[in-house]
Length: 397
Ligand SMILES: [Zn+2]
Image (cartoon, rainbow, N blue to C red; front, side, top):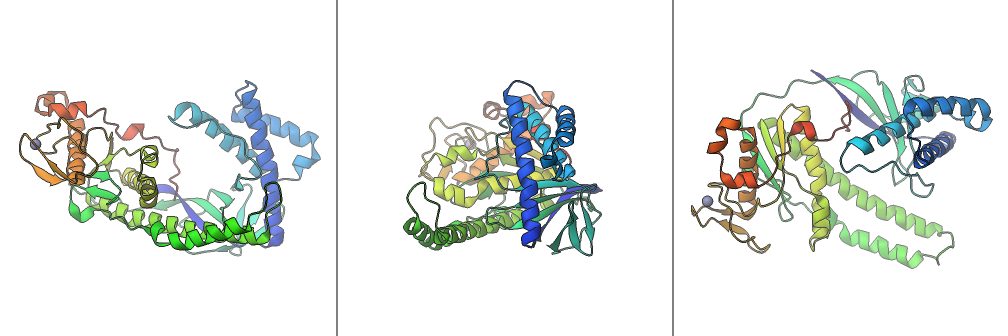
């Protein structure tokens, strides 16, 4: 079995190369914004139309001709795809204008535009950049995205094909409930993901840097001092480090869960809901969104049955007999007790059980419906694999 994935490496461009990258980004940004304006005036630009316009524009203007044609074309391709997704994928907005002050540089090159020679990345216009090869590429890359993050670091993300051993055949099913005290509570306590609080641990350091930023902030309109920018960068670095630790933990955990289970029922957690609550800060720290994304992606790639279960009523429904309690459990109540069958379990453990039971019921055929528990039917629609919006072919790594 082979799959298409991204391998990302750090780049160390010199001053000349960086200037060339930023110049290329300038042209691409301008083109993207042109396409956005085209769309706003009522024309719905397809990649074909945009591509033709680009060819004409490049013939007319020597200014555009100075930039890499491959990068410019890829920008329009990305734009057309983003526009298409905004119509088809639920919750995806229209592509927006990329502003100079907050859009981060991102350039795409196909094999016509880049090559790897002498372990360096060669881009159009004689740009050559050393790559930190932290691991070997499994095959020749078909395209590369060169981008800069909020810390100013440059990365190259190569699209490659790699052979993978098929995921081991396992039985087993697991239900996952997201929470704040324990990031993920599952039906099997051995697979819980505890709250590790990476952001909390560096909160004092972050607060110190933010105070420094506040001291060095100049009046509105004046250009920021270099000391302010330095503090801002350090604060961003601390925040980024915590985010990376969260992602790493989520990956290790998701791998363990996916390796050992054929069916994975996941609470369809909406981050916006918690973000509005009193627990917003802790919820952001637990990085539930990142863990969920990692689990769903990994499960789908391994060919597991992944089911997203809406969270409504999961905490107040008994996972053993399916009876729904009359009253909502208060947030302080940590133990669930069923009035009908007397089943007692931790609040989140019971919710995980209900999520799993709901997913199992989703698999039952029409004939099995009479065996299904009535309350589970009311829990809501079960969203199954095909509806999970995914970009085609490329799994983001
Ligand atoms: Zn019960």
